Amino acid sequence: MSRLRGGESVASFEGSLVSRSIPIDPPSFQAVLQAAPAPRTVWAAPDDTDTESTENDRDPTVIGSGAAVVLRADGPARFERIRSQADALVTDADTDTAWPARPRLFGGFAFHDDHDPTPPWTGFSGAQFVLPRIQITWKDDTAWLTTNAIGDSPALETRIERAHRWVESLSATGPTADPPGIHHRERLTDRATWRTAVTRSIDRIRAGELRKVVLAQALRATVDGKLSTADTLCRLRESYPDCFGFLVDATEGRHFLGATPERLVSLRGQSIHTGALAGTIGRGNTPEEDERLARELQESEKNAHEHDLVVNAIREQLAPFTRQITTDDRRVRRFATVQHLETPMSAKLAREEHVLSLVEALHPTPAVGGLPPDRALTTIRTTEPFDRGWYAAPVGWFDTEGNGSFAVALRSAVATQDVATLFAGVGIVSDSDPDDEWDEVQLKYRPVLDALQ
Image (cartoon, rainbow, N blue to C red; front, top):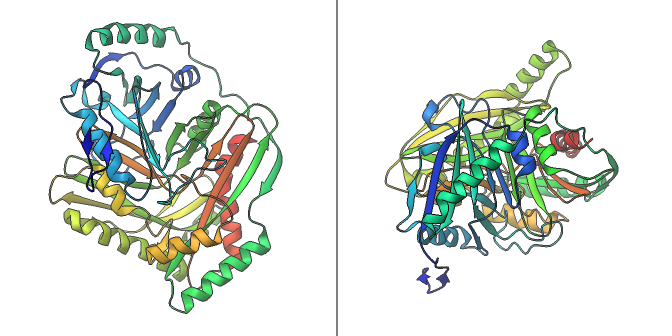
């Protein structure tokens, strides 16, 4: 056993990580996802990942199947505990793989430090990462098959041959299946309760107790037929190709999936990419109306103030780790149902760091928590009548070298075979209007709702 600070033990492993990969003909993403044995993990890179990244820096798309190892941790030290377990796992690792195909651990974290999983979050720990037994990677026009194991190198050669035959046996699927439809919706926050919560938060901001707080709502949707997470994620990817698609299977038949527009941070070598995404308006029904709304967003003092709070906080949170931070011009980023203000940011590390150190420093950004952080989190905890679970928390991957990519789990839902619980939130500042913020939340439900009905 190895030890954390304070003497707490972390898991040891019977043998070292062994990984092998081979190039393969690119299979159908949909076919692999539908056929992959659980637990499944998915990281689907956006089609238009930041232009500030070089082609080699851009994320691959990966489906993981099965579990060679599962790392779990709870409590305030969950980031450090996951990293310590991962360090033990990769000690003396034998990873004969190309960079895009290298073994990755996929998973995420709960929003709150004191996460205690209750329905619908049963089976989701405070932090949980899976090293898949089989990993299929797509990047550009190339694909790889990777198999991972702990300490059984001879068997790995046989396993990769067997996995390759399985992939080759998959036939391309047709169009994504129709959504199951929704026959019942239950709001976990009614409009009157919402108006009271937002008004009280505004009063606290104007009194100087808070600068910003992000309040969320939850919506429980019961579907008509069986909910296929594979088909739902494929529909989300088709409608939102410029978002990070993700899926994490937990125990108890529960799945967390979404298509989030917001990168938290990525690290490749010394290069960091992050950014602020805050300030929202809807889309227009015509190009002219769309442009008018974009100008309204750009000229809005309320949205500019909310956005600047996020930019400044990210700079402060990254400053201890970096030699320089570059902030690009603010722009409007358009999605199918909304437009956001976005400021891309990049930086160079001052010293070697694991991506999880950056994730811990940045979570939660003011875009999903608020300022000051401790008061905002207390307000969220005492105001929201449901458990956020992994909503608005970091999801993503890291590799054996400490590189990785994480997004903020927005536009998301936790699902079973017949129920999906959706989450969406908005930033509250001094000049927020409760009814306008209610309407914005409904816009943010749309991606997952549209994929279900």
